[in-house]
Length: 66
Image (cartoon, rainbow, N blue to C red):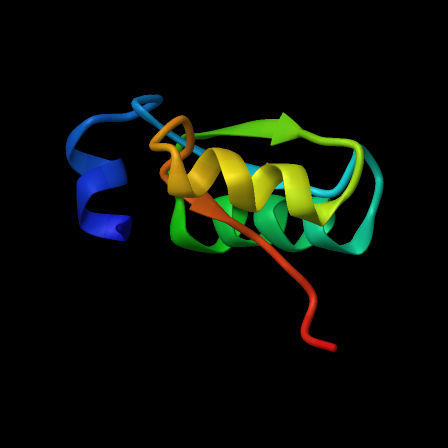
C-alpha cells in the first residue's frame, strides 16, 4: 500500500471512526511517518468504514483491536 501511495499520491484513502479519534490519528501518523498522501474519510463509527472497504469505496481502514 505504501508503494502504491507513493506512486500515485492522493489516489488512496483510508476510513476511520471519526475526526479526532484514535483511529483517525493513527492514520495521520502513518501518513506522516511513511511520507505518503492518503485521503482520510471520517465515518460515524468503525462498522460503516468496514462496509465501504468491502464495497471498494476505500483503499484501507484503520480500526482498533478489541
